[in-house]
Image (tube, rainbow, N blue to C red; front, side, top):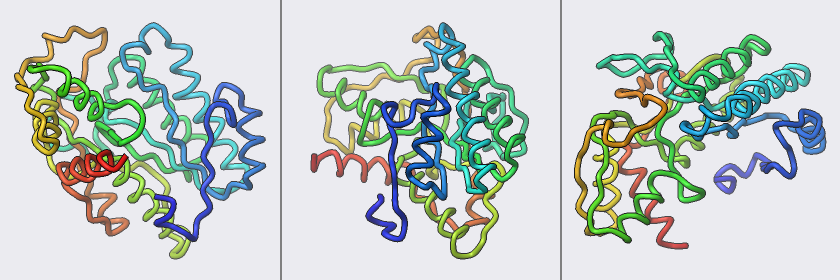
Length: 271
């Protein structure tokens, strides 16, 4: 992705370089890089475990975000922060718009919403991008887990009563860089909240079928209801995002989620 934007110099930090629990280390690293833009990809994302680690979830999803907002305000540079479809969590049958009500359930969702609200309060120029069902060829995520399980087992149960849209990280990153390029060259206003996911709609069951079909994995997939997988946190039954705002503001053409899955799998084959 960095190679696609040669006019930008990218710096990536892990915990060793910039520990979000230590604001001074983050500020030192940003100063060292002479950052002109901050993109916050970090979050406490273990939805179930957050219930037993609320202080840690809050430290990462709220306190660290506020610290980044303060740094960007002081240095007058953009902050782009990723949030979650979990903040909506309403019984709604139409895609969520940014102005729709938020009713987060569980520590993860509540801290993600508080983090974005506090960031915008501290630094109104903050950009919040709410996204959903994110997967990647790297790290641990649903797509890679299903690939592993599909090759290990003959049959899998996957929920069909949670509806949303898978989001490929490369498409999310490309949209982010389009926004930043328009800010850099056209002085576009980035401030506020934007929804982003790939196009289309599906369930986790549909997502799994697509992964197996495109990978030629012959594992039987059984559609089941969410109650067959007990959880301390209620998942949103419907979290499809309306992306009209971000598409109209930045002229984005967003690929369908199946196209994203196909490109991700092709990249994994090359590794």
